[in-house]
Length: 338
Image 1: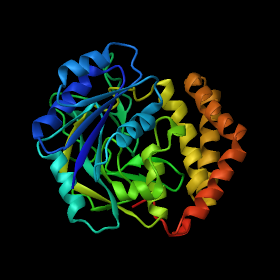
Image 2: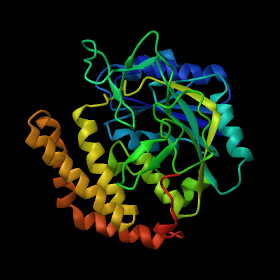
Image 3: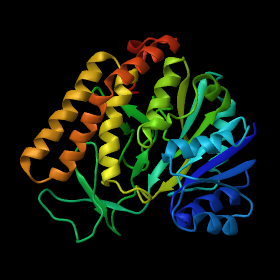
Image 4: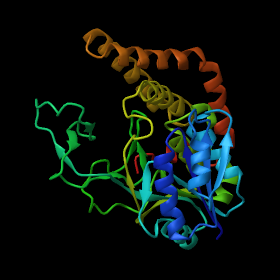
């Protein structure tokens, strides 16, 4: 199976160079395509000089991760397309593991998602403790706060994507022990370390560029599932991920797009009870934060996301109808929590 690797860059040629060099050193990929997403710095020149064995495609604007990835996918006719985040460094054999898993999987398997390990070591902050100045802090699904620590533990970032009953798309096994054995079957793939079968993309289409970034892999997983395709996890396809190094985990972009796209993707694909919970909980979260006065900037972004969806509701309802007509599997038969 001819295999291409696509990496999207935006103003971080240093990260992208490290990721792509690891792919080139492995030597498995038939094509390695770097898409520069309208960088405002000298990324294109730097990448072309540093990566002569890769194809660097320069977009004129930043259309978001989905547009950048789609540009790369369209630039190759490979049977398998591997998507790799530019802030993720693959272990030796990563591309081969994804390709071989897909080659030996059933023809109904559309995508294989890798094992993403968080870079560095992490430790739990005790309740009430304050992190060191400028320290990064991430929360796990149970609300515990983790911060980098030299004597901490290595933890997982993702073994795929699942969606909870409130429409929240999330990494499966987020902050789980690194030796966690994950189920092969999973609802969706992580767009940062996965392989997609060309025939599946021909069937359902590429990533939705209107989402710009965040939830685009979850949305594509919904389309795949509702057309009868499946997603699997390959534990031997490993990358180390510097989480949110290229976008910022609590940037304004993240807060707005994450809230907006959660509701939008639920509107397009999820059963109505999930749509209702996603909508109400997003609105309540924004109002509570606004009332508390502690996170008003974040609250305004969440409420702006809600207003954006409400103002374009007819468009989203029309999309829901189109997706219903295209689907071969009813919504109620899709288990997004797998």
